[in-house]
Length: 499
Ligand code: NDP
Image 1 (cartoon, rainbow, N blue to C red):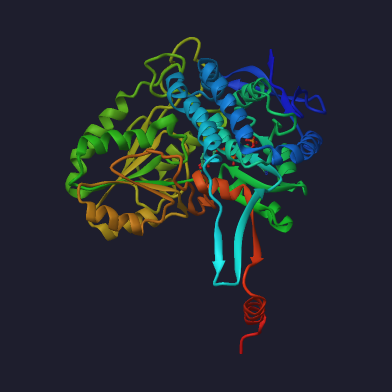
Image 2 (spheres, helix red, strand yellow; image 1 turned 45 degrees about the vertical axis):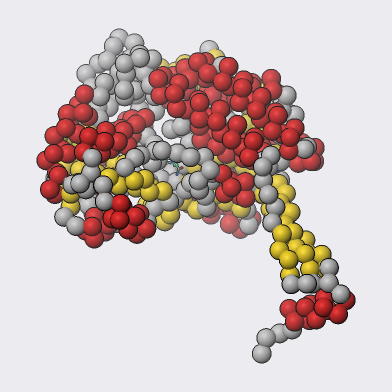
């Protein structure tokens, strides 16, 4: 059976304790590979390798770092079909989605940051006639990157690429549930000539391998994407060590449809927002608010379109909805749909696993796209993140009412608005508590923009300049340039206590 290896000091290595976990194909429910059950000893080795590699990598010219990263991107692209298939089998997502979204985006992440570092600027501040200040930005050191299972390579590379580009060395831990494309990435890094120890990938559970990364004193910086409960644990562990932390966490995102929206577009985009990747995207719009005047016009075609989504074998070309990532995730979705019933919701479609899909997939973790109406905005189903193919639809009558609903959860990751009234769109965009607001679209991403959440959805931002800043430490250098008298006057004025 295929065994995933750790990637430490440039080598594909077995876990120190020799223990492995079973890795399940969610479309069949069967174990198909083994993943290292790494612990603190493996993390220790990875940190030692990252420490040894730091001096050289952090002083490697940007052009050379860029060249190696572009090579990594090219090699992933050359093996796109293999990567896409691995992501599909490991995660349960449709092969078509991995092929057109996950893997191309990982390639783009490497290309984006490989070229971004060739075009950065540093700041200068001239202090009247007395001094010239300039800002140096150096790498932070050894950084710990912890990523989830829903977009495995997409989100891992979203962290690895800026961290590498800015000269850090890395200890990364992908989700133990979906280790396969991170393993393929380690093969590609060896082939691309990434120096040993610059990127180390330790596979294993969050509670052991992940916690060892968070707690390690030599890891200065933690970038995490995952659930809010885990993020809170990480923040607690990192705070006493004064680590720099970026947390990208859960969401309970609103989709808001006004009666004047282009209705076909609003339905198509809301459907994508609700069910893409089986609803397992942090940005999914799982709470849909429709203005009363358009409620019927929206509801019927939306439910018809949800029913028409084909739940099927992720390897089949016509499949829209693959398997959920694990049995635990399937149970969580079943639990929340039962809760929706208990809370008085009406299930308009779905509400159960589909009939057996095929002989191959009879043990898989499938669930039908589910639409629920009749729930209040405050009930648990509308407050807690389900992270599955379940959307609720609720009517509203005014901007203020829908704004209160949109902002009425502990989360603040993203929101989508559909309206032809641009004045209203901008007004609401300003008042919605979310890190990203899409107007008449969903998941339209530009890698340069700040990405992240407010409230319990996140701390800090990723993307473009934000990521380059996060992975670097600014240092101001102040050079006196004025006459001695001006300099000493300025210095005195600055250091004199205020009355
Ligand atoms: P988890 O929080 O369970 O896990 C995320 C990562 O953290 C995994 O690698 C996990 O390891 C690891 N981990 C778990 N416990 C610890 C710990 N104590 N210390 C260090 N690391 C730990 O999230 P999921 O993998 O279940 O992903 C789903 C969640 O991610 C959803 O809530 C979703 O909203 C969120 N998410 C947020 C995004 C954003 O950008 N805001 C994007 C995508 C997802 P392991 O699983 O191997 O045990």
